[in-house]
Image (cartoon, rainbow, N blue to C red; front, side, top):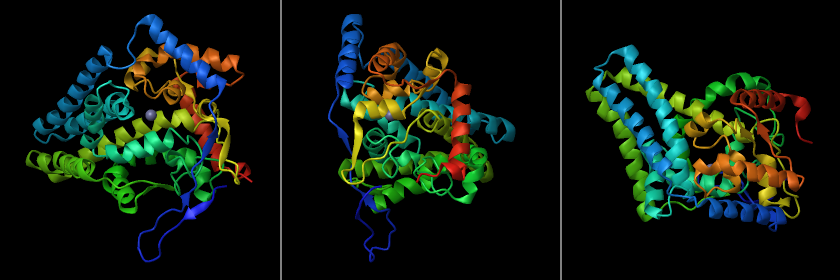
Length: 378
Ligand SMILES: [Zn+2]
């Protein structure tokens, strides 16, 4: 489907995936222009600010306090096994909350109009052990541009363990991936901490897309972030807890974080309702404009749940997030009506699962379908 334009230099000794040619979209559509105008009108008429919302600052304080409280609580418990592990569950949940509610907006520059406030919010990811530099390329540049395009969107590539696109090859174990992938999601943070970031920087690539290696301040933040995280996670706790309880707490917290983060993101793109368009092989073009592509490949879940919206940083309204990633997430429920109405007017399917359970069920059925041989792409 895609053209290989670069491959591994045999003498370098590092395995790289073949680099694929960039995908192009059709030029901007009336749909996208109309949608942008209507959303701008909404902000003008209501007088609301797109960024720097007090609700965000308040929420950030709350989730960061829960994170700090559970971390230092673990150190203060003096090695009591069960309370420590229970607090590790809270710690893992709060790590996911910081990711959804602080880091994600900071990384998209939708937190504030001040670039340093955005930078500080984005840096919470380095505090949580993963590189904000790599994330900005993987998520902002790649995932948000080439959503659900096989061999471009690295988020749908969990090979060999899972098959998350009808255009990926199927192997025997995918037959039961709907049963085991949920468990493997829990190991995603460990993979980031110890493998993905280092590998991506070593090879200068994310999946099949080239990535410039960090230099200067970016490199200092990368190294400093890893030292800070490993120090706070493994070195400092050793003064308070037995070594095996430090490892067990790390395992429990990151497992909870990984399942939470993965499931929320999978419900937006890896569900039955989402499409997986491929570019035309000769032109590398997708037949739609970028905005229509986002609507076809992204699905909301429980869009009316205010509790869920608060917890997952508005990522239950991912259609709105993908169309307007630089608007603060607290506005997504309000603009979802504008997006839904405009989609309907332009004859586009607005994809949404009515509840969290409906989204989870759809992801389960999607995984089962992808594991079946009959649905292998021709
Ligand atoms: Zn995003």
